[in-house]
Image (cartoon, rainbow, N blue to C red; front, side):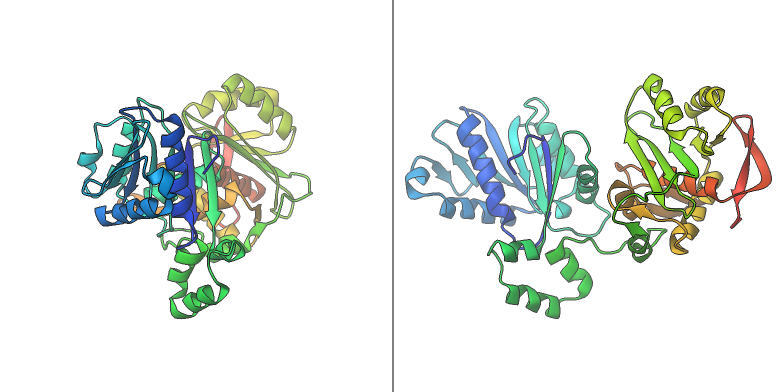
Length: 392
């Protein structure tokens, strides 16, 4: 809770103590920084859950501090001695959440809060630039809280990520080992993993398969030398990502950064050297590719279209499921787990869920394709031929 980042995301086991920690954080914010008219919010999926948090705070505070507060149970509102007001709100109706200026907020059980309610709460923090803590159990992968957690876990600027499992709670004396073991015995494995181990259930829309992703993960980068590179160029808020594969298809080099193009080009040239490289040449990537090719003849371009992206990703799917590519734990694995596909009228669309990044997946797919080249030319990009991997 007590970190300097504006956005804190906590994925936690049920009954692990996260509610108490967040009540402490929000109360201290109001007590230390509050003034008359300043509002601090606790938002829960429904009003009844907000009332639970209100009751816990009232019971939790020492009597000498509680007496300094004015408690308004009918409105789930607490006015502190400094004039600050703590509100406990249900997030069932997003339209009811707009309008206020909020100086700090907790979103409890966020995976069960409507995305439109998150938009409304975020708008209330705009004028104050207030911090927010997003907490709760995990509930699948198709929700805004899951996407926020993955951004925070990947090190997005201004975000902090924490994960609390039932085993952490056991170590802290919050839960008993026997109670957790009983829950594991009584509940379906998917439900147990979500509620007690903070692991989202498998998403059938993931093209790689969670078991295959786990099997392809390494503890760290390979010590080998790169034999092929894939570079996905950052556009707007995206990242520029470079992935180098050794002769065995293991990731041995990995770069992820956001820099101006004038800084990006020298970095790519320096890190790649004379190693064969496949570079995203879509849109603004085309002139960047031309400048890279002036520095070396080892750069080829790859333009993303619906069809070419499908071919690229299906090659990566084959490589992952055949264990001919391996990658380290961390951002690459996180993006792989979040990646999804949908069927459209024109074919299969592969992409990250809305709000998340797929730059690492793209760069890895480009590197896999480059490593698997054969001499059949099927088109041209950047003035040089593009060839299909052996699987095609």
